[in-house]
Image 1 (cartoon, rainbow, N blue to C red):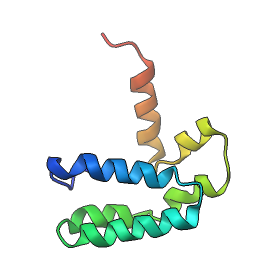
Image 2: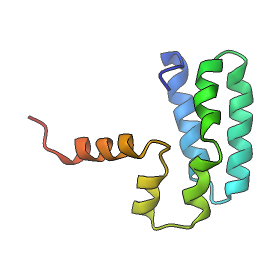
Image 3: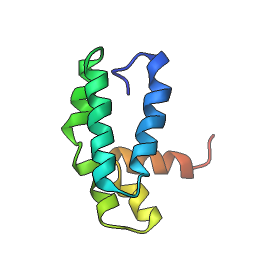
Image 4: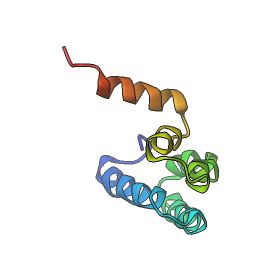
Amino acid sequence: MEHLPESEQSWVARKMEEVWHDPNPDCALESLKVLATWLDKDYPGAVRSLREGLEETLTAGRLHLPQKLYVSLSSTNIIECANDKVQVTLPQP
């Protein structure tokens, strides 16, 4: 998302969230490809990141995992996902 202007980040994030919750991984993959094609016109840097792990981001959905495990594994960066969980779990100073 950091490769997108702030004005574009929220709708792209919503679209990607919607796609990742699509129960049909094939439809989700097609939707991500359409999004990537649209973004490529103005934001090729953002599209490189998206396309880098396109198929892999939908693997957890294809496995029909329990929700908690799905959420943990649906990130292409497992370390970042773990760090996010720690930040949410730990009390703020």
